[in-house]
Image (cartoon, rainbow, N blue to C red; front, side):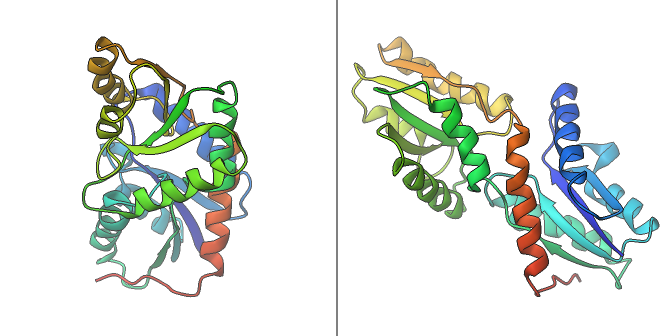
Length: 243
């Protein structure tokens, strides 16, 4: 039997996790699988091993794995498969496939476009997480922003909290007298968004005109992007193994 495990990072703020549950429940309602569950990378009571074993006990033999992450880096490429391989050593008959991350799906960046629609003359820094070890998030965010740029007169710039597209370095090159808007390209508000604001504070104190938008805030309109990735995964014939 096929089942879907949705794997999110998790938050220390209970209200954010509850919002994630509502978002996942909305997606689950669009899929036919009888067994679909949410796991968190950093939540002991609902971590990947516990939820995976629970799903196997319910009869699941084929797992579709949906990383609830915007872009693929350490969590998607390393942490998730490592955790699955570790628990599935005891279940050699179980197979799994991991879907792509969904941050550059049209339904997701269209939420971003809606948030940014009230701006015109500002330079807008669309700022995601980033990673020093992985270049794919930089490449995918850059390509996404280029697509968005084709349909607007706004000045859109890809930036990352970490890695080669460093927000801090981009701010250093900008004219402090121009209006700058930072869009935190995150699923919800949290400590990384607060870090972006703290990092920006010295620039604001130096006279930069910087303002911030809301995050994607787990807008239910993004659900179609997740569903698209699950459909693409089903159409892929490669099955991941485990040790």
